[in-house]
Length: 496
Image 1 (cartoon, rainbow, N blue to C red):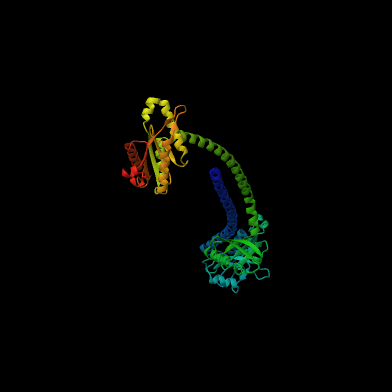
Image 2: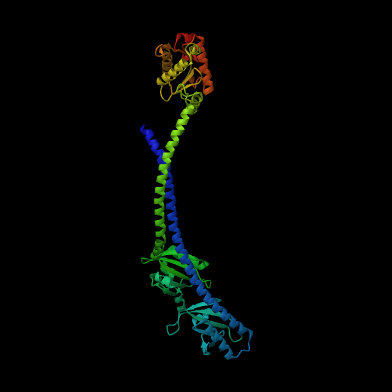
């Protein structure tokens, strides 16, 4: 009874707990994915910011390049321009680009600037770099004596006396790119060349910018991040890395400039990223917790409703099944139910020795004719009631005909028990009486067959038991006969 109670509880709890666990797991996965998505969203925003800064600087340099290219095309097209006209064109370039200075010089570095002043830069190191390289951009440190750090935009022209136009773009203008939002986030912006050298930096102070070369600074503590950044610079790829230098944690986002393998690095505090993710995740977390609570309450009430409904349905179903399987006169299994249950047992226990009794009430027609059908029904009802009382509840007992009964005993392991059970049935009908005022002795002929030796399926076993019943009737009724003589327990059976 206790096991049945536990099974009943599990029957209702499992359908509730399992879906709840599934929902909780789904919501947990959703929360994890939401957290991951929030971090990815912040990362995407940082990438967009870095790309935007790179595009702004690149667009500025592109504009400068187009202005210089236009003026140089004019100089190349018209070789008759006077010196004053040339100086005027150089001045136009300076005015249009907000350059600190613009110079037009020949192969030896001699020429004029936007004000018409003579220049001689042939001995300058950067001029020698210009002559030995095809690069359009060049960075100069400045000399500390008034000459500022600059990005030099170089345009080569085909003209007899003028070969280069150089535009000096102040690096300080790069510092104004960083937005107020990133400044408040403690971010910095750095311009790097192809080797990782820091050409310019603005924004928050950081130990990561303490050295002249960013790659060398992060190499010792973050070798993988340094290698990734080196690859991004070489391939011109957008990239992101987490670095830590002297207990300072930063997220570095690299965006290529598209020129000279230069690029910019946006550095943001790791704490800032956590703060942004925390704000976004807080709302999601509250929603997930509220959703779990609502689902739990809803599921609980649904479980209660389902339990009540199932109990009612099971009761009704059981009642209907019992009615469909029950012989109305005797209360035993009817023919179909008896056959079905025996077949199911055989299929599930094909090697478990069992025994089948097939019995007929002797002279039942005479009882009906002489004592009336009502008394005949009383006889059948009494037989059903009494024989069901002498066997186990697990055994299968049914009325399979007008005055024919079938008893299937499960699990009879040896010959001794088989003979004992057979004798019990035989003795029962030798002393069984029906009636209150007038006692009528009810006798029966009984046939017995053993499963699976005498029939491995219902039909074969039934035929074997029926042949045993025929034996009993042939001997004069009111006795029991086995299908196989080996099971016989009387001298008459053995002679037969």
